[in-house]
Length: 158
Image (cartoon, rainbow, N blue to C red; front, side):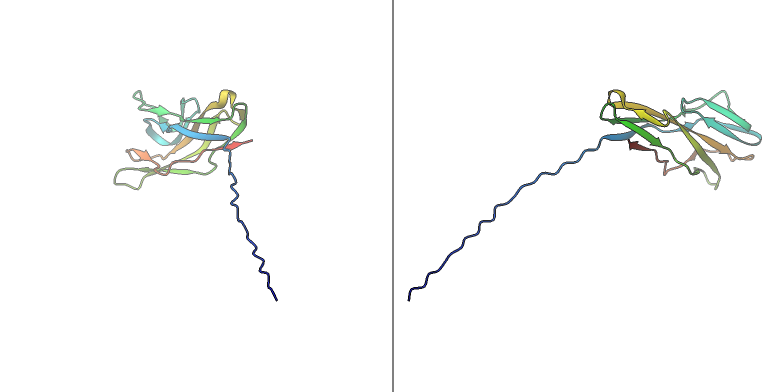
């Protein structure tokens, strides 16, 4: 009796797929926020740094003639032209630490931006300016104050 052997050959053909992703919008920091030089007279106060970069003191804070470097933070939003986006600013307090020997601190909060709300990327780019309020103590120690961690600004594609 003859036996037949059936040989079955299987071919495995690789399938190549493609992967895609789209990031429609991004944000890049251009300029850091700087409240400049301030002075304290008799009591605590604040310095409001507007998104346009102008400063307004209140309480015991004065702005000396030598202003130092004063800048609102500046960011560039880039992406697909005519996409809409919203900026999310910090809602918490940030602590600035004196860089000298003492443990002196100041608080920054109440962030504002121009534009605010929902905006459109005309031409694919937009500039976002961010200001905030600096809280100065009545006997604030002299020194240079910084926050090494920075603050986060988020752009949300709509």
